[in-house]
Every structure is written in C-alpha cells, then in structure tokens.
Length: 220
Picture 1: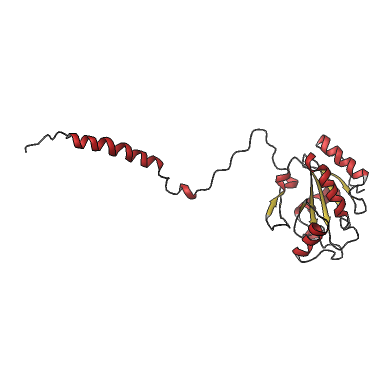
Picture 2 (picture 1 turned 135 degrees about the horizontal axis):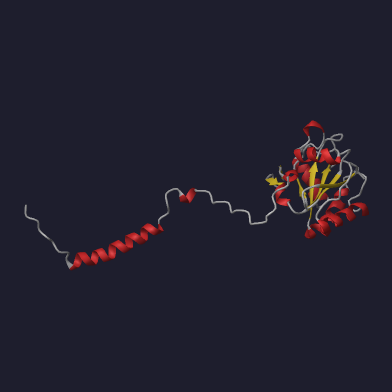
C-alpha cells in the first residue's frame, strides 16, 4: 500500500489557528449541564458564630405577611415574649410595648407578641381583625405572630419550654424576658405595665450584661 504524506496547506493552518482557540473559549463560557438550576451552597458560619439556643429553635408564622419566621434570627438579642389579645382589658398595653420597641430596639431588644384566645376567647378568629387591632389601632411595629395557644397541652413549643422554668401565663399580656444567651429571665404578670420600672430595669440589665439573673420560679 502506498501512503501519501499530505502536508497541510497554508489555508488549513490558518483555519486551525482560528477554529481551535474559539472552540475552547466557547466551551469555557458554556454552563455546566444542570448548574443553572442547582441551589446555591449555604455559606459556612463564620468562626465564633453563636449557635441558635434550644429555646429559640422554633418557627412561627408572621401575622403581617403570613411568612414563616425562625426565632433563631433573634439569637444574641434580648427578647420580651408576650401573649396578647385584642379584646382584653389589658389590650392598651400594646401602646407600652410599642414604646419599649422604640426606646430599646436599636440597643438589642426584640418584642415577640403571640396573640392568643386561651383566656375567655379574647382574641379574634380572623387574622385581619387581629392585625387591625395591633397594627392599625395601636401602631405596633414589633414582631407579631399568628394566633396561637400559649397554655395547656396545646401550648406552642416556645411557651411550653418557658412554662418549665417560669410558669405558664395566668392571663393575657403575660411577659417573659430572655437574655442574649437564650436563657429565660424574669417573668412579669398581666398587671405589670410594659413601662413599669421593675420591667424596664430588668431590660436594662439584660441589655448591659447579656445574661439573665438566676431566678426562682416566680412571676412579678
């Protein structure tokens, strides 16, 4: 068999010089199959980041927009947890809660309100009616969640945990403080106004120290 050795022509050399680099460039810019729909990787927590305390490892639905909210988002803040109601004699305490929000939110206080009908059904069934009371009537700008149960066997997990160390709410507008360390602090009953000096002093203490005082199972 006779083999012919064909030398590349000048034209073929020019074509190779143009086609190969451009093909390589196109391949480098094409998406990897499936990469466009793959979820983005979650960034690792930075060194020294505080893990979510067990007490806050719960999710609840926000009243304002119906979206879920993790209480882990409030790790490292001082929390004032309160069960509210729209048709109670203590309902005007919404004003005091809003005042606390305006005064201390920038310093690290977050108010978490949980509307409840556990006490004589003094909360609306309709989400819009609850929102009208707390947002429109009292101008609440702090976090308010959907109606929930705060006592007994149906109590939501946050209140069930708080009951173990600080007792269950005795009525609407029962108040629990939680330190920056995610541990329960003092509890204050319905008759304690949000602007009461004992409550505000404890808030000041938690904001300054970050940790709750060791306290017996008592409610002021």
